[in-house]
Image (cartoon, rainbow, N blue to C red; front, side, top):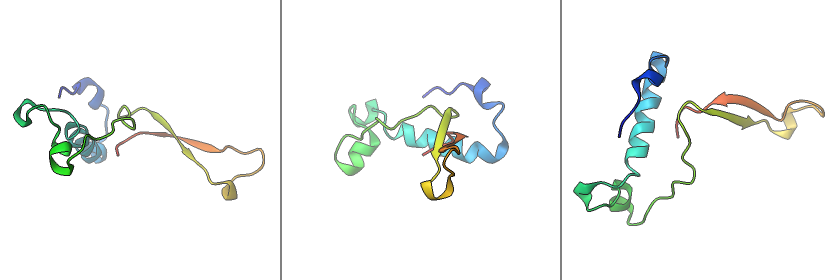
Length: 85
């Protein structure tokens, strides 16, 4: 797995744990020659993992605000930055 260090040079030190956890999460869902083209996840659980939920680290995301906490004409979501799974 190749990670571009130019992207991570602006990441604050407190988020590096999230970077590492995200990298391990994705790496466990990638096939490897050492496991005969099976993923570590597949070797452990016995089935191929879904990757439909995978997102780009650091991309924009939106958190839904519950209806009980919003006004009639207020915002329904809050813009955030994706930092991991």
